[in-house]
Length: 166
Image (cartoon, rainbow, N blue to C red; front, side):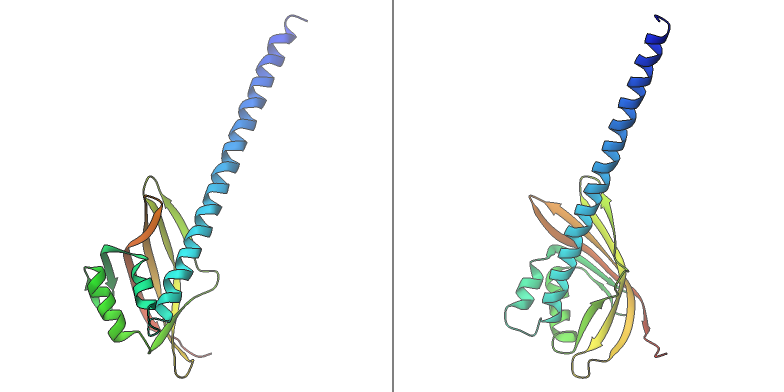
């Protein structure tokens, strides 16, 4: 019996280690789900204000999602180096003209340790007067969490192409 006791001790220790690892994996999955929910909510807020930026006060709300030193990279329009320049371009070219829609099922979120997250996916653009969607593109947003606040620091919109009707 003395030979069996150490075996059971090792077996119990291995089972405990396995349970702890499984618990940690569950915690990591829970953290990723929470991050995805947070970034999904941020995306919805960012683009709700973008889509309604011709309504008084909405462009200022949109600015609240953006870092002052925002960099915006657009394959067709070039680079915008500040939040102020991005907002001026948005007011001139977007507000009252078109809206952005997230392509369902395309959103992916990846954590950045001790910083925030990367969001990527596909979006399409639709004319406000006709409701007709005319283009789509890939996007990537780098979100920073600082002092409990999330803000977009880098936005990429690229691979723009027309939507071809079936």
